[in-house]
Length: 178
Image (cartoon, rainbow, N blue to C red; front, side, top):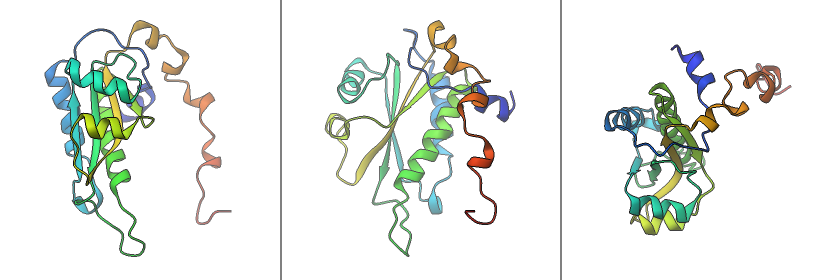
């Protein structure tokens, strides 16, 4: 499958089969996150791969994982992030999001469904997984096999972008804002 097909195929899965994810597929997804670009190649990401019943119960207290058997908590170590010298902008959110995106696309490439979650209680994640103060949970990525119900949803159609996305001329500006 080429890249254009892959990005159209991927969708947010909110219903997963009760089926474990094979280690080689999880390793493939995690490797995609490892090699993702980060600001100044600082690589501040830390990914917590959660598959145990106890760990998933902790995730359930922080957010709805929709029954996903694997949850990746994408964190950023603020002591390692690049900061822009002009205004001290911290690259943590950008870096963690690039890592998350790479893993999400690798999941789709390997036949797994995914769901990127930002609505979670960070204190539950911080306390439940023992994060030090300088490490912040930024994103959660649920992984697993989409249920048949999810695959038949209109949200899963590769053609959905034509009706659900703004036209390109409303999102791209050439040379200046106007």
